[in-house]
Amino acid sequence: MIVDTHCHLDFKDFDPDRDSVLERARAKGVVRIINVGSSAEGSRRAIELSKKHDIVYASVGIHPHEAACVTDKVFDELKTLVIHNSRAPLRVPYDGEQGKVVAIGEVGLDYYRNLSPKKSQEAAFRKFIRLAIKMDLPLIIHSREADDDVINILKEHESRIRGVIHCFSGSEDMLKGYMDLGFYISFTCNLTFRNAKGLRGLAKTVPIEKVLLETDAPFLAPEGLRGRRNEPAYLTYLVEEWSGITGLSKDDIERITTHNANSLFKLGLDNKGSRVAYEIRDSLYLNITNRCTNNCYFCVRAQTAFVKGHNLKLEKEPDTDEILEAIGDPKKYKEIVFCGYGEPTTRLDVVKAVAARLKKKGAVIRLVTNGHGDLINKKPIVKELAGLIDKASVSLNTSDEGQYNKICKPLFGENAYKAVVKFITDCVKNGIETEVTCLNLPEIDIKGCEKAAKALGASFRQRRHGVTG
Image 1: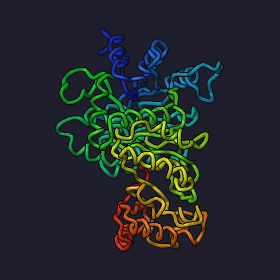
Image 2 (image 1 turned 60 degrees about the vertical axis):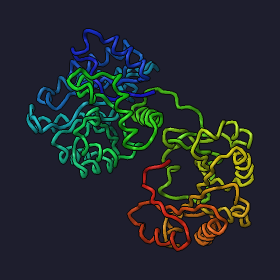
Image 3 (image 1 turned 120 degrees about the vertical axis):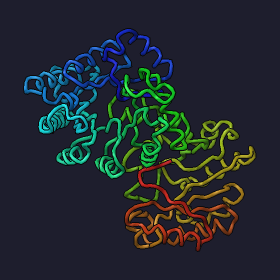
Image 4 (image 1 turned 180 degrees about the vertical axis):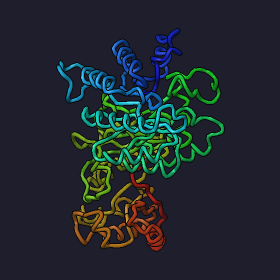
């Protein structure tokens, strides 16, 4: 299940076989296509296509090349289109049907060709930003050799806007600037080109949680098909490329980017119920509780119930049999990981019971923990885990006790940090392969964390802020 978030099916390139193009897309698992408006007439055509085809949605906007044409009359006409074809708050009348205009775009600045004067481009861009804010819709932004000005204009409205930077091709600094504003990043099939090594290097720095897929069809067909018309079915080439870039499976890429697109554009895709067992790469993670004894300000729990596209918000805590049923055959996976959306050792007996059953089947088992297990259970627990747990990943987060209390806000107060250190020491003493992890927050001394891990006899792994799973 994949989403093409930027396509121009309304272009005449598709007139001979548009229906066949859509059928090929469906056959490749494309469940949504956003037909992006690039002119007043193109926006109207996008809406008409969205009414005709269930998987097609629309955006309304005018490409910066056409910015000089954005008169007050043209803008008012486009605003009316949005009001009557979206789920935006100003829709009048609103009859409860699914509105299929899901974004404002593509809009922005293009200084590469300068087909419209810069002042006209900037004026039109600001108008569309204000429209997006008023309609509570995301922006689809075109920026070519204009990133500084685009970012500066976006900053004028930064607390009220969201969206995606389409077909990113800027610098590392510009990429960071867009991500700091909270924008999603999208690369087209040019990511597959043989000469796109630098672009792939930039793509690798983007958390997959902020990535969208797009073809920009009919343009930019993937490597191997260059010179031909691009189309949504070719999105599979991009999925494969992202899999290679990230080390995630193709299923992971499809699931995560589809969740991203649905979150941003409200595409009406059904978010499956909460997961007890969920796959990432070749590992299976177990979500046995949502309870945690830390209240870390940087935790994913404060932002979303989803990790790598999986819904982890439990309606109830699963029992041992339910967990084992969700696992199925453990031999399919490199490892089984107690992790989830909370602290697994709050359910120590369940961890032990499930692990014991899995070990009989030859499973490799890892525990991801905040190290509070002794405090939670009011007794030392590592000896009970020895022989059941092969590896422990312990979130120390910092080498400084005062800083730990400040950033993690542990339920157990000042006793927590020393308990985590003792837990790590006990794991090492009991023959459990142990790694200490810390997050690359600006205030954290990573080298100090690594030194502390080695002093405790553990290995060290730096986690990346904003990247989970």
